[in-house]
Amino acid sequence: LSVPWPAVPLVLLWSPFLEGLTSGNVQVIQMAAFAAMFYVPGANWRLTPRSAGRTSARDATAASEAPRTLRREGLDGILAAGVGIFKYTQLLTLVWLLRPRPRAAILGGLALAAIVVVLLPFTGIGVYWDWLAQLGRGADPNWALAGAPLTSIAGRPVAMVAAGIAVLGMFFVRGRDAGAWVGIALLVAAPSIHGYGMLFLLPTLLILRRDLAIVLAIAVATYNPDLWWIAITVAGGALAASYRFPRLRNAANRDAAGDLRQTQEGVFAGSR
Image 1 (cartoon, rainbow, N blue to C red):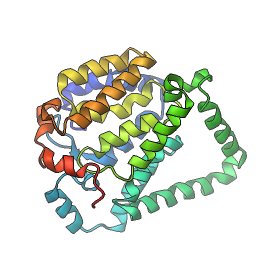
Image 2 (cartoon, one colour; image 1 turned 180 degrees about the horizontal axis):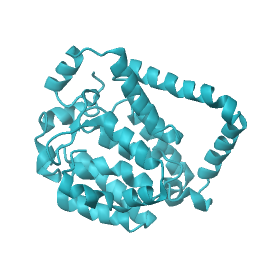
Image 3 (tube, rainbow, N blue to C red; image 1 turned 135 degrees about the horizontal axis):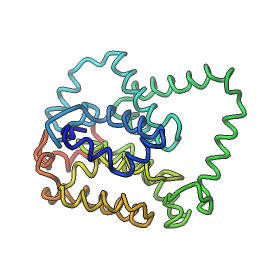
Image 4 (tube, rainbow, N blue to C red; image 1 turned 135 degrees about the vertical axis):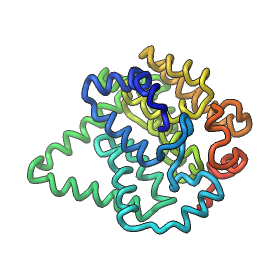
């Protein structure tokens, strides 16, 4: 995510990271897969998307000309599947990959299915029924262990509509900010959210101007569910508005890899 090394300890002390690290939650590993899928290391504070993100016309041309080996496609698919291997809504990354890289998405899905089949002699089929039952409890806003999903704030009908829009959006999101939009969609569509789940908001915070991002990060750190959703809403709104008002971005991402006009035209475009 191009965070400079001196700042890494501060980022890891942010409550979503700290909770995941101290509790040994797998969400931290899934966030690592998410970051590896969408980004490569770049200049300090400048998010550098991988070719699947289509950062600009120049990068899109380079990506189309680069050889896509089976190994590369398989790795991308496995990373996308790895983000959601334990939480089905986080498989939205695999859904997003279907349009720009269908072969990679298929390979990732096959790898996921192979893991299930190989482990069946050890796990049995019953554990999957238990998992589905757990999903049902997670969708119940009255279940305390669900944390603070959108259902607990806006009610189930609104949450279901928002989740449907988030899933549909995965087929249209393109451009240098695809990772940030997918991260927001993962939060909107999740049937349960805990503090460590807010890690998926991090790419958006790293794109936005520093003062705004710090305020939103503090709001997340309060562990107040209402403030979580205010932070998600403001972050998404600011990211969308930044295509017209570039100063909503930090300077490093304002002029990175292609101009904002290209991004604005391409982020929700259907073209490849």
